[in-house]
Length: 346
View 1: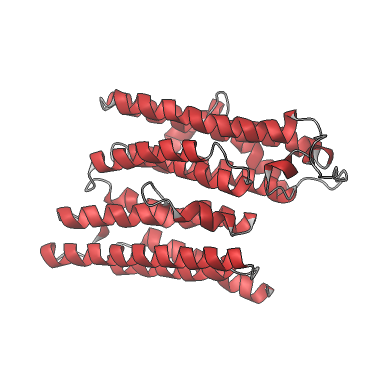
View 2: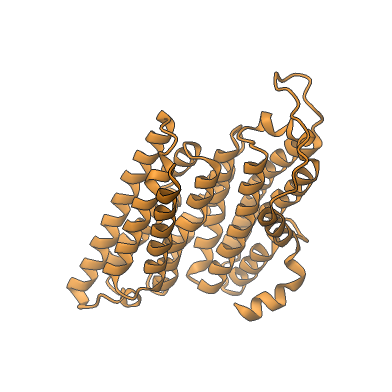
């Protein structure tokens, strides 16, 4: 793709995200969401592969429907209350429609069907954008409207997302699909806590973005799209593979790694809010996710070069690891000891 075109799309993504997260008016927030959708479509379909075109079409249809619902929800609220302010969402029907719209935007169960397919049709870098940057505006809208939304609906969606994200990821062999189901599962953790502690949901999103970026960039640097390819990459970049193992375990939420921090705080907050049953269920469901992260980690580092696959061993790569990958992986592993500072800042 032309560098000038890439720059225009990157600037449009930045503009759309900034517009949505900084606006108070529903029309401005909707405009930002639309700019974002239109800017990411050429990036998804740039390879001209039929799967990429299919992914871009699915993405466009789902996001257009969700944006129409956001607009419909805000207009219904304005009709009944005279308010266009995002934080003044009070009409029950508007709240329900907005919950559905944002669940579609984010890929929460039962509106998750598009997300794994779209991620599978995109490159790893575009997949990273779809899993992190594109979810920031809807999460912000969820944060701003959280006092008005029904906790029971969000909790049901959250538990279903954690269950389905873990369950569907078990038999996948494509790394992008595994990361898509991982994203759905993590969104469940954000949705369950946003009604009780919106700041904690945002902290969870930031840490999830950090860890997911580290995994996507690591996989991109070793060009691993399938588990069978991942098995042969230990000859190419041994040190990066070893760190990838720990980053995946951090994403699974194992102590003493960074990923344990949001899970620990969310379970603590849910117990304080006297919904210990939901906390227990979602904690048990995260074990499903742990299984497929362990499977990825096992393929990346513990399996010795397969004698059964047809893949040749890859040449050792003497190039230094990208600085961004190094910084992100370090942060993905070592933020738990400074959690009091993080909580003080948040």
